[in-house]
Amino acid sequence: MIYEPAEDSFMLKHKISNLVSKGMKVLDMGCGSGILAQEALDCGAEVLAADINPDAVKFCKKLGIKAVVSDLFSNISKEKFDLITFNPPYLPRDEIEDEESALVTTGGDKGNEILGRFLKEAGNFLNKESKILFIASSLTPDVDKLLADNNYSFKVVSEKPLFFEKLRVCLAQNFQV
Image (cartoon, rainbow, N blue to C red; front, top):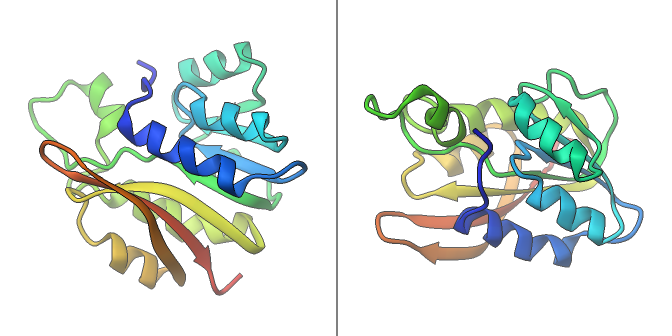
């Protein structure tokens, strides 16, 4: 199952054109359908897309996007990026959700575990002055604390209330890089 673009994807895509310029190096982590990678490419960036799902990587490659199968940063070379985009699975585990669907929606038991792992590793792949653009849900606990614990300053650049949650697009920068 490839994550189909939804409101969270479109919110991130809208912000990419304001952040990406020709020649930038962009990593689209958890690329899914490639919507964010494609937007960065359209802005002139050099893009690498990564996803744990081999079907998503295969789909992106068919679109002409350079992509690799990777569990977060496990298969990303030690290169540095100017921007990392991430639309993580961010919902808490729901015991009745099937395993395939949970792969694209569930961020762990509480919903923040994948984001926590990502933030812990991401600083190793950022240039000085680089940024991370990611989405978080009001259903995902302790996002602010995860950012602070991993030395990130951040601002919310967009918010949208939905039926049962509020989505926030966050722009973060690691002040330890």
